[in-house]
Image (cartoon, rainbow, N blue to C red; front, side, top):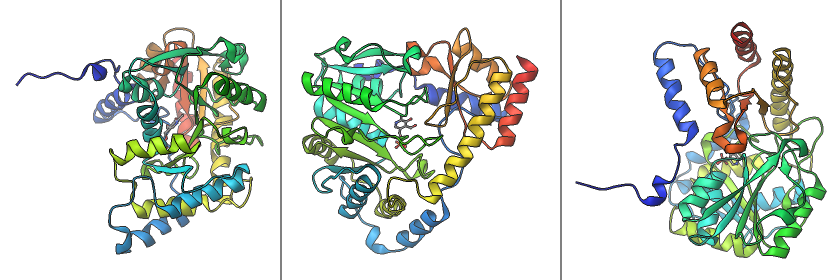
Amino acid sequence: MNFEFATRVKKIPPYLFAEMEDRVSIKKAQGVDIIELGIGDPDLPTPAPIVEEVRKHVLDPENHNYPTSAGELETRQAVADYYKKRFGVEVDPKGEVCILLGSKEGLANIARAFVNPGEKVIVPDPSYPVYAQGATTLCDAVSVRVPLQPKRNFWFEDSPAVLDRTARMIYVNYPNNPTGAVASKEYLIGLYTWCQQTDTIMVYDNAYSELTFDGYVAPSILEYGKEGAIEFGSVSKTFNMTGYRIGYAVGDSKLITGLKKVKSQVDSGAPKFLQKAAAFALSQYTGRDKPRMVQDNIRVFQERRDLLVKGLRDLGFKVDPPKGTFYLWFQVGGSSMAFAEKMLNLGVVVTPGIGFGQAGEGYIRIAATQPTARIEEALERMRRAL
Ligand code: PLP
C-alpha cells in the first residue's frame, strides 16, 4: 500500500527532545552512565500528600467513568480559587476555565480553535517548540519568528510596534523556557496593549510561574486584562507532577469556549482522580506566597542552580542565574549540536539551543533536574574534557 504523511506533518522537523531520548537510550544500552540534564522533567517525587489524594480517589468507583473534556466543575473551581488567592484575579469557573491534559495540549489546541490556514502566528525565537510546530504548523498556519534579545533580558527588541500587526495570535512565555528570563510588568502591559490595539490573541504560557527564585514573584497576564488573552498553567513543574498530565487554561470566555469546542471533539478529559489530586495541590495556596511543599522544591532547585552557575563560570562560561525556571542558558561559542554531541560522549545530556529556533544556535540549555552529587559529577566530567 502506498501512502504518505500529510503535508503539514512533513513540515514538522524531528522533535529534538524525542531524538535526544533515542540517542540517550542507545548510550544507556551500551552501559554508559548517563547524567540527564536535558529534558525539563523534575527528578523529585510528587509531594506525598498529593500522591495520597490520588490513592484515595482512584479507589472510588465514582471516579472511574468518563470525565468531561473541559474538566470537572470542582477542578475548575479549584483553579479559579487559586487565581484569586495567588494572583488576585477573579475568574468564572464555568466560562473562563478549562482543564487540560497538560498545558502542552492546550497550547496546541488553542490555535486549532482560532487560527485559519495561511494566517500568521508570532512565535518567539528561541521558544518551546510546541508554539511553532504543534500549534502553528499543524494548523497550516505560518509562524513569524521574532528573536528574543539577550541584551534586552530576552524580550523582543524595541517596542511591540515592530511586530507584525496582521498576525492572528502571539505566544508569550515568562518565566521563559529556554532562557530562564522573566519579564517586567511594564513590558507585559506593553505587549498586552499592543495585542488589544491590533486584535491579536495573546496566548500567555505561565507553566513556570511558581518556579521562581530570589524572592521574584511571577505575575499572571490576566492581572493586566482578560479580554483577548488566555493563560496556560500547569501542576507539572510546580508540584513535580509532569506525569499526571494536568494543566489548565484561564482567560477570555470566548477563547475558552473555542478551546472547549475543539477539545470536545478530540479528547474526553483528564482522569477524575488525577483532577482531584491537582485540585488538592492547588488548594495548598492560601495567598500569594508559595505553600510549604512548593517552597521545599524551590529550595532544592535553587541550590542546584547556584551549584551549576558556579561550576560553569569556573569552566569559563558566562552564565547568569535565572530568576525563574530550572534552566541555565548560555553560549558555548560554536555549534550547539556539536557541543551537545561532545557532552553526550561524556555521558552528560544537555539540550542544543538550535532545538528552540535559529536564535538559539550557539547556546546550550541545562536543566537542574538531577541531585547535586550528579551535577558535581557532570561538572567534573566537563572539567576533565573541556
Ligand atoms: N510550556 C513550557 C514553556 C514548557 O517548557 C512546558 C514543558 O516543558 C510546557 C508548557 C508543558 O507542560 P505540561 O504539558 O506538562 O503542562
